[in-house]
Image 1 (cartoon, rainbow, N blue to C red):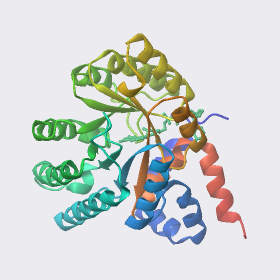
Image 2: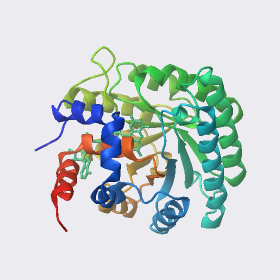
Image 3: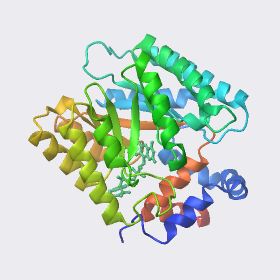
Amino acid sequence: MTFTLSNPLRPAILAASRSTRLERGISRSKLTNRLVKRFVPGADEASAVAAVRALVESGRFISVDYLGEDISHPDEAEATVQAYLSLLEAYRSIGVDSSAAGARPLEVSIKLSALGQSLPDGEALALVNARTICAAAEEIGAWVNVDAEDHTTTDSTLRIVRELRQEFPSVATVLQAYLHRTEADCRELAHAGSRIRLCKGAYKEPAEVAFQSKDDVDASYLRCLKVLMEGQGYPMVASHDPQMIEAAQSYAREAGRDADDFEIQMLFGIRDGEQTRLIADGLRVRTYVPFGNDWYGYFMRRLAERPANLIFFLRSLVSTK
Ligand code: FDA
């Protein structure tokens, strides 16, 4: 069975990802915690840094996300900033020489909603908070990526990224192939120096703004990927899909790109063997490593993506071991 974006279970799981009642129930289950570890190395910074160290030793680049979204008070945004500043400080102990590589092996991925974007005057607050993180990352030679959230935030996110790039040109962002607008966004953002992560998109979006079937999303992903590969920027191919990984390599060849002119990105705990195989083939692979207590929304989106994850989860809930 292939799980597609049009699978009837996906909307229900994505709706559940926003339910606080379910969140309380699921988070309290000890069995869930065992499964969550497959996708989230831990709640504290030390677990994240240990995972990063192992990934870097295996030849991977990394991007760490401090889990959190949909905050309700500026203090929570400040706590998120502090978590990133502490993480970036801890990056120093990993001992990666970022000046030697064309690409920086260490990155942080930030969600603007966790930095205050949806609060009153949130765009200005998120920009200030993101700037603080970018300045600290610059100092230690790490990159920053601004993640994409639901479509109501896209315009605001791209405005903030444009502002950040004035001061920190290497700041990357994410475009979601399921949105109708994304091919045009790719054309606009495929300029020299522009790092763009292309993913399919993980949120529940209405048909007015997003393709609904897997075939349409895949076709859009391929069109967007071609635009990015033929452009002047640095494409980051975020997908576990063998078809997209193949296409990335062939479009890169056609566009005359070397293996260090783009990168493949996958999530922690997903297709680990494939990640190391791609490195052995000479490709750059960056692993996205989430950490923190606020794992519920992230975890539910992973369940929505793939029936095998959901079945494993349900089995762990009824297992007596
Ligand atoms: P999809 O889920 O369509 O699966 C296609 C095929 O890939 C499957 O049929 C199978 O062959 C293979 N596959 C997928 N999962 C597998 C598994 N667990 N094991 C084995 N094979 C598997 N989204 C977003 O909205 N905003 C964001 O900022 C980001 N950021 C981000 C960063 C990175 C590094 C990644 C990899 C992904 C994101 N995403 C994201 C999530 C993204 O939008 C999407 O939901 C997931 O990557 C799932 O889509 P795929 O392209 O992986 O394939």
